[in-house]
Image (cartoon, rainbow, N blue to C red; front, side):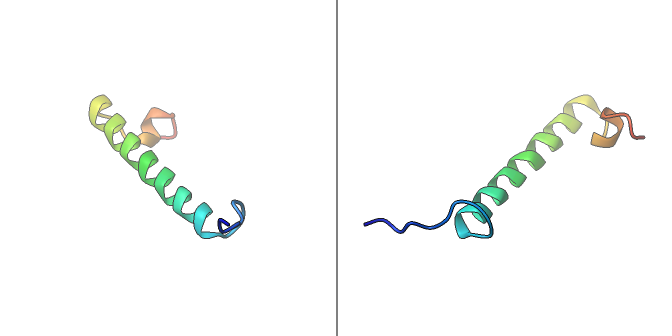
Length: 47
């Protein structure tokens, strides 16, 4: 049988996906900043 590890809370599965989504968000933010010439805070009106 498969290992029935929890998919919520502090588990390896959750932490791996959290890291992957954080990397994806960082790349999207960097690409957006490159194409617009503005930082993320400027884009959302905080600066």
